[in-house]
Length: 174
Image (cartoon, rainbow, N blue to C red; front, side, top):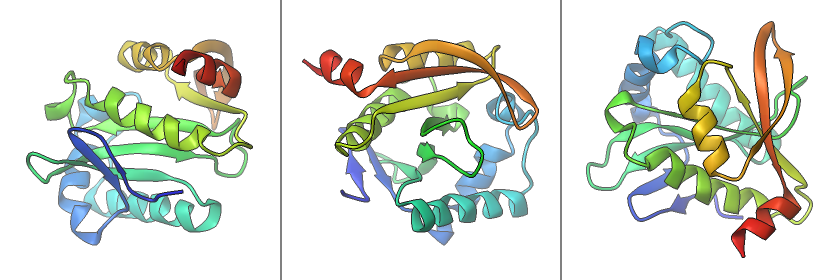
């Protein structure tokens, strides 16, 4: 499976040390981080988070890609998969700079990421863990074919779990 994915407007690629300026800006934006733990990250914590995402690839063979906007060359956020210890499932997640939200870019990136995930014949389902008030993420999950599955508490946060099975995904791709 490829570690780099392309869409018409984006490249999903591995993290680079030089992504820190852009990623720290994303993580420092209160509006962007409102539903992702509820607080901004310092530059140092943003770098640690990048390192965790890069390490996730090494440990699990999947993770979040840095999302690069082809027209500008800018790193505009992240899209990909996580399943750390104690997680409720194989999760797709997304986080883009506010400047690039509302343009269909998260959907474009998430769709190619889902294609990648379900290219593994053993992958039976993908979930999204969404803050109950995050209406934009709920709309994106539904647009991707995910459906509300259940409420859950994950690391002390009340969340909603959305998901899609392999069969549902393959049926929607027809």
